[in-house]
Length: 96
Image (cartoon, rainbow, N blue to C red; front, side):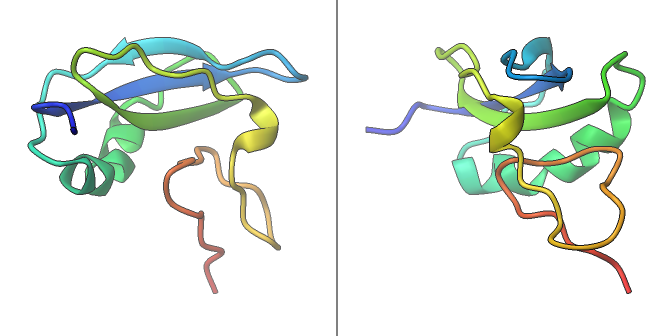
């Protein structure tokens, strides 16, 4: 059974194998994981001031804590420069 609603957790990731740290839980509530996931790109853009080399967004059930994400689990584009922010729930797309 899915949670009643989802929220976006913003996580900051450093270098190496250390897990990413939760920086912030955003206030908007989403009725489905799909709606939450769709809002993660905009949430990342608004969370650009986190002092980490990589910032990611993860949708979590409202009662859950965000799970740990290791830097090696972040999906980056296959070619081109790495984006300033990566979303582990959606593959990043290289522009061009």
